[in-house]
Length: 103
Image 1 (cartoon, one colour):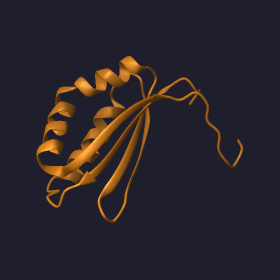
Image 2 (image 1 turned 135 degrees about the vertical axis):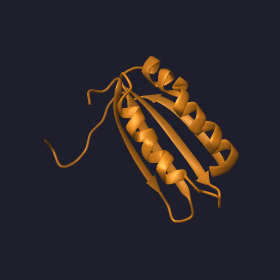
Image 3 (image 1 turned 180 degrees about the vertical axis):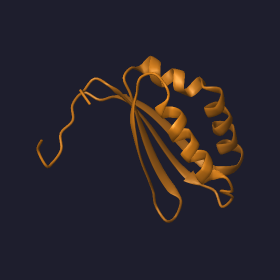
Image 4 (image 1 turned 30 degrees about the vertical axis):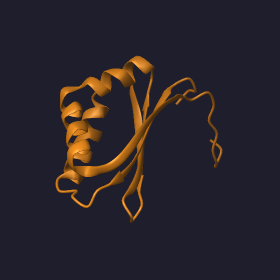
C-alpha cells in the first residue's frame, strides 16, 4: 500500500457471551472486502478477550461509508449489546510505513 491511506483501529474487550461472534466477524471481513476503497485488514485477539482489528481504506470517505453499511451497522449494535464490555475506534492517516524483510 502506498502511504496516505486511512487506518481504522478498533480495540475491544470481549464479554463472556460471544455466541455468534466468530461467524459475524468472518462475515464482516468478507463484506468489508466488497466495499469501495477497501485495502485490507489485520486482527489479533489475546486469550483474555482483548482484541485489535485494523482495517485499511483508500480514503476517509471510504472508511466512513463502511461504517454506514446496513449489515455492518447491525453487527455494531450487536457488539454493543452482547459481545463487548468496552471498545474504542480510532481513525488515522498512515503517512509512512516500513518493514522487514526488504522487497
